Every structure is written in C-alpha cells, then in structure tokens.
Amino acid sequence: MKDYPKNPPRHLTFRVARRDDPVSEVTEQDALRSAERYPHVVLRGPVFGFAEQRPADHPGWRLLSEVADGFPQQARDGLNSHLWHRAKNETAPGEELRARLLDAVARLEREPLDELRVAGTRYRVVRADEFARVGPEGIEGPRPTDPDAPRRDIGDRTAGPAADRTRGFFVDHATPTGIMESIQRMELLSLRYRAARIPSEVRFDSERALATHPGVVLLPAMFTFAERKSASWEPKAALQPTPRDARATLYDYLAEFLPKLEQEVSARDARGYALAAEEFRTGPPRDEVTVLGRRFQVIRVERLMRIGPDGPEPPRPSDRDPYGPSRIHPPLAEVEERESGGRP
Image 1 (cartoon, rainbow, N blue to C red):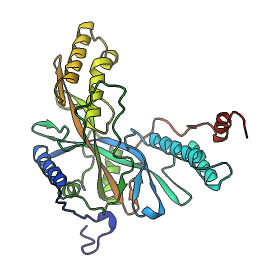
Image 2: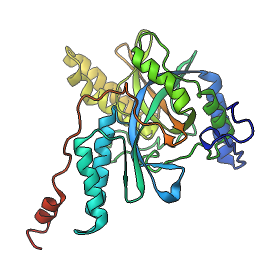
Image 3: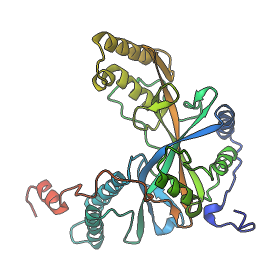
Image 4: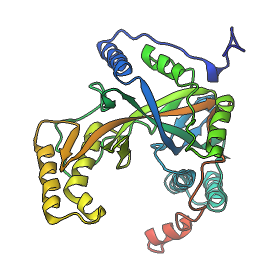
C-alpha cells in the first residue's frame, strides 16, 4: 500500500466502521479475546466456489456457492449446474437468454473454464484458503457470538442444516468492516504457504498471489470437527454453516460412521462410541468429546479470499483437478419434453 499513500486502489482500500449497537460491541470483544487466546493461524488448504458480477454490482462480486469445494472442477461443475437451472427456471424455449446460458453450459462441459460472460453478467470460479486459529490452549472452537442453535437436537436427522451464510455474500474489498476484522485482514495480507513439506509449485503460486491479488477479504466462518493427533488436529468432515451442524456431524460420526469407516473396530468399542454419542446428544451443549482415549472437538474454520484489481482470485496453476469437464445435466429440451409428457 505504500505505493498509493493518498489514494489506494479499491482492492487495497480498508474502511473501518465502528458500530455502537450492543451486538457489534459484543462481537468485537469476542474477536479481541480470540486474538489473544489464539494468536497464530494454520493454513489448511484451498477451497473453491463460484461468483457472479452483474453490471449493477461492479466492482463487487456476489458468491453463488458455499466456497467449500475441494478442487476447481467441482466449482466449475457447480457453475455449470447453476447456469443450466437458470435456463430451465428463468427462460422459455426460443429466448435469447436461454440460448446464451446453454451455450455457456456447453462450453463448461468441454473446457476447464474459470471465467465466462453471459448476457452482461460475469461468472468466475474463485478460490479461498481455509485456516484455523491456534494458541497455547489448542485450536479455536466456536465463539459465543457465532450464529448457532445449541438447543436443537443434534440427532434429529429430519432437520436440515442451517442456512448457508456464504452464498449471497458480497465481496468488495472496500466494504467497511469492524475494527477487529479490519486489523485481522491487515495481519493476513502476507499469509502464504511457507513450509518445506509443501510442494514448490504451491509455494511459488502462493508467493506470486501476494502481488497479483494483494487484498484480503474474510468470508463467514464455518465449522467442522477434528480429532486430536500427537502433534496436530485432523479435520474429519465437511464444513458446516453453524456449530450445531458440526455437532450433529460429530454425533453421526461417532454413532454410526466411525465403526464402518475404520477397520478392526470391535463390537465393544462400537458400543462405546455410540454411548459417547448419545451422551453428547442428550447432555448440555458442548464442543468436545473424549472417548476410548480419543479426543474430538468442534472447530472454527475461517477462509480468506485474495482480491486483485479485477476482483477475487481464480484457481492457481498448482490447484490440481482429479478429473476434467463433463456433462452434468441431460439436454434441457429432452428434460422439458419428458416433464410435459410429450405435449408441445
């Protein structure tokens, strides 16, 4: 930012908003306590999603997915499906917008595209990096001010997950943020992959991103559960929108999936895990379970998205895919013919 002392570009502009309402004040205090208890960050790896920029939103971008996919092609497939459903639900046969949307779908079925434009709207596959905060006490769990529903039964499988807070999130580096979030964003500007165990091409791309996409935006926190190993924490499940949803995932894991996923779990141990799961379910809300010498904890996962002059960072060359593009949906005309029963 030193090259723009008086008028920094938007992707390097920080605007700090001090909000005096009680909720904001408590949230600020919560973030300050977290920074003191968990002063270090540990990068977990990239996640991917997709976003759109409509003309009225320029220069900002709106996220259209959870940004929780494990590799870029998953996000491209998600964008493919999004455009296909737009064509199906928002257009009629013969309309120009439908033709343009389906042309974009056809391209995504053939090419690993990270950006395309349809009828004036830009779409982009975007990346973010997951990280967790750690300190002398261990790894950070949910904060008191994180949106939660601690009294909902974590064993009730008829209750779906809470609404995702990432989908619809507006990404604009110059959007005002609270004092602590602004400080944390500045502290994360230089965060990159450094460890020697990380492949050299990943470290190279990470270093280069500091120059190509120097800004940082924090996405809404998400949650999962991890198991304590000898010198680290091992995440065991997909990201969830609330601590309650992560607790429900941990309950299901102990009650049902762990004995099936791990070899040589005796019937006696399986009953022990199931009993611990029921105690976790019926007891006071908590974020930690210790059973048969193993420790599991619900953890808080943050994501930083790097921002450049043209918006969010796309996938890097070192972000590899296990498979390529393919058809996700059948031809729309065939689907509509089946749904109409052959009627014109």
